[in-house]
Image (cartoon, rainbow, N blue to C red; front, side, top):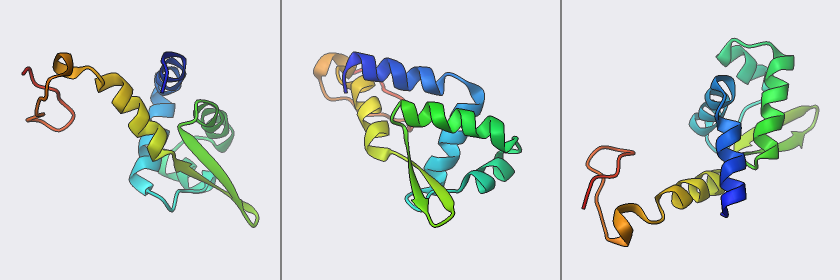
Length: 108
């Protein structure tokens, strides 16, 4: 992942509804969710959700697949891991470090 891609991904996640949507898709895992199920879970209007899903897809954080009459949205885990890798690439100045708390980088 390069800097421009990271900025686009972080920008897409820098909205409360898009962050909630992305997290719901991460929880759903590989099977993904339809917009109807997502809208119900997140208690948001479908047209509003559609806008946010489009932004997440544009940033490459979610993929969409047509299955019959339904659209299935999935978190793109490789893109998510690429973003996390980009953000932590030089953690502790390149020396190994262990996170004692999930998601936290401790000092070396």
